[in-house]
Image (cartoon, rainbow, N blue to C red; front, side, top):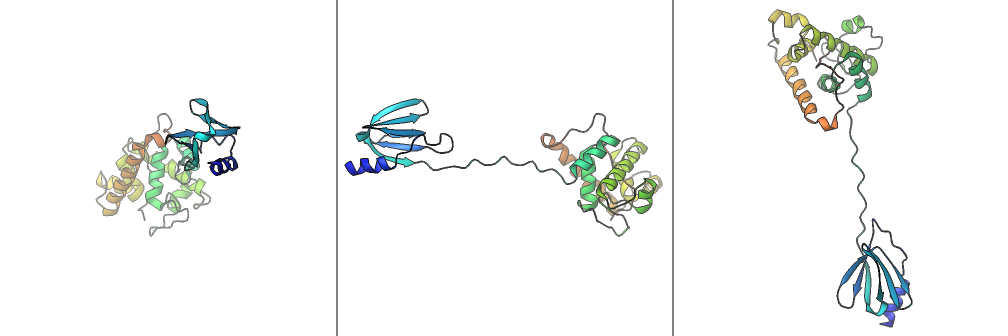
Amino acid sequence: MRLKRAALLLSLVVLAAPTLRAEYVVLRSGQRLRVTGYQLLGDKYRLQMAGGVVEIAAEDVVAIEPEDSFTSLPAKAIVKPPYRELVQAAAARYNVDADLITSVIAVESNFDPKALSRKNARGLMQLLPETAARLGVQDIYDPQENIDAGTRYLRELLEKYNNNLTLALAAYNAGPDRVEQYGRVPPFTETLSYVRRVKRSYDKSKSKASAKTPAPPGAIAATSRPRQSQ
């Protein structure tokens, strides 16, 4: 018993950390007391417990065992889509939903600012050089210029088709002339797939409203730029 007391004395810890670590004081009776701190004062232990402080005779203490330590998990970071700040700026400027712009970028270029399609569409929102020139773009591969011009074009198409997202997206992919020719979404496999993919991505993003920034008041669903896609 004396050896045990000596061992306990050597293991004396004053005010163990109260939040991430605790100890168990094992009594001769077999009872285990969870404590957040303890002190050996002569022949007594002063134990700090959740409900207050108690004193127990040292001879009644058999052992003091550390509780497993747990590290608090860091708060999960909210992952924002690439170029979110540029998208939000363009969304506010042209009154277009930021999530729609992001969905178009994801399908058009997969967020690759240097993307170049078979149709010569370029950059994040896959602008054709002639469309970019009309919209005043100086560097078609510059993310800020590309997103700004693409969003502006998307807004134009939405207004042209009375906010009909399906037709606006079809025109963004196949060009307004093709939409006018057929009076509906052109029956091209690529265009049909494009419209479906963008809308699916957009709908999915809106279903996660808690993780998204609300669209500006009155923002309209949009789609950007005239091109025959990649």
